[in-house]
Amino acid sequence: MTRMHSVASPLALAFLQGEVARMLELRPTCENCNKALPPDSLEARICSFECTFCAGCVEGVLLNVCPNCGGGFVPRPIRPNTNWRDDNFLGASPASEVVRHRPVDLSAHAPFAGKVRGIAPEQR
Image (tube, rainbow, N blue to C red; front, side):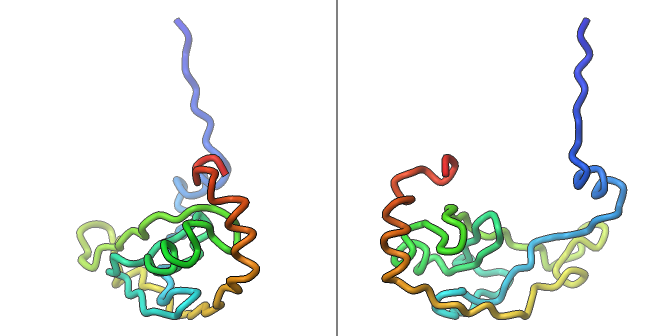
């Protein structure tokens, strides 16, 4: 009988050992239009690097192509505001207050997005 071994990454091991406690920043605004995106916003979209934009900019301006990395976007999770278990809630881990307003240069983004948007985000 073959025995299966799972190998965890050093980051995963550190997390499991309680050495790392990093969570999403929950950035407060859209990087492009500066629209407020509070922690409970259903309009917030993020890429894998946490670049944060509103749904309107992602769909209508960016064409689901992150101008910073070329990745796609997904809805940002909502952190619980109630301490259901072990202080894993908004009160113990508040949202960021750092605004990253960096309007996208649409003339530069258009050719970039044109190269990337035909590729499914999971294959980029």
